Length: 204
Image (cartoon, rainbow, N blue to C red; front, side, top):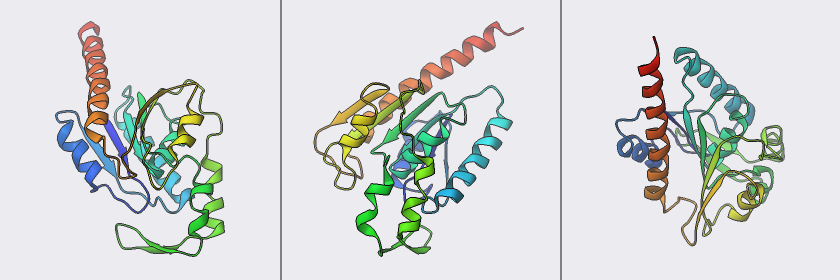
């Protein structure tokens, strides 16, 4: 099973979410909506989702893909729930620095909610940052160095000593190497399924 966590102002119906659903079939892909622009509410909603999901599917550890701010939240949640793997696409791992130049701007979510970027909003992301991610959490980062929104070097530096970095020159924040990322994700899901099948065959 794969869970997709969308980025800021996006939704479960985004291009990436739809591509993951269609390209990874027959593996189940679940994409959820949550208020990415309200950090405390976002973490609460995502935590409730994973608590329910893991309660229904005891013994199953989902793989998770987080894009941009979805990667930021996924990184935090991977330390609180059992994921088989965390994949991050152009993750916004230090949003308190990323959004500072946008203070005062009014943004609109995919569902039409308008909000203003404020100092308080930016600072409210800090409790969910992971300063030292090299703690054994299985992670893969997909990065376009041409990302015009997020400096890819931040993620490269944070994960230099751990995880797997797949980095492409060029590209942009929308991420132009989704096909390659999907193949890597598919390999993981196939391995996980083979492992479950093996367990089922040996179970009494």
